[in-house]
Length: 282
Image (cartoon, rainbow, N blue to C red):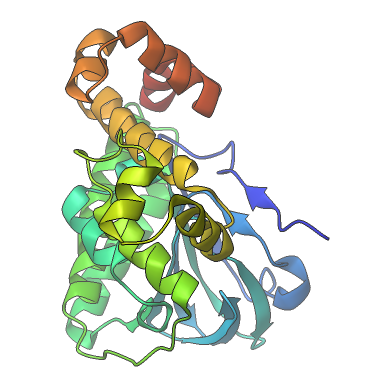
């Protein structure tokens, strides 16, 4: 069986953020350029001209001018079609950069709610922020990472506001695996990610093997992966946004042995906590 590829963020990303403007020429043959795959980061498409169609987890989504589409980490998506004048911005962001209150908004969205129209009274400010972020990303200014991070933080709150204020709930049929997976994700927090899979299975009144089957079927990843992913995301936030020592961060996350935390962090991310801090702050 052919495996669906999982892509990491572009090496051109700065501090976990990547932005590009795609012209009509870039979006030509959209269906062949963007084959079915998963990404391990958040994506936001903001179309400024034309129209494009993208399939996300088996649902066709038509993106029009002044629409924003969010793709969550590990959702399967692929290009379907695009008009000859289609153009817009592609923004990729590492999960640890998304503030918790914004993350709650994004993770609660159904696929049919991940596409939203930017209100006319918000378009100018939002597009100005995106354009400034894009110019800063392509420049060589001193403190480039800090400038990009500040602009991205403003932009992500703009996106969160757009989705939080949406009044267009759409009924969506979910199979049992998808429902269990969604409920499992709601149970993961900074207080539960060190719990065992059986803890979550008990909370959901199902067996551990059934939970793992449902999570695998819906995301292509195991329960253990998602628990470690939540832990790593929080660790990355603390490494990026604070000056705390690795030992302090390990204890704050609930690890009794900070050396075990460092080994686990390196095993999962392929870099030490201090290497991560240095890389993303450069």
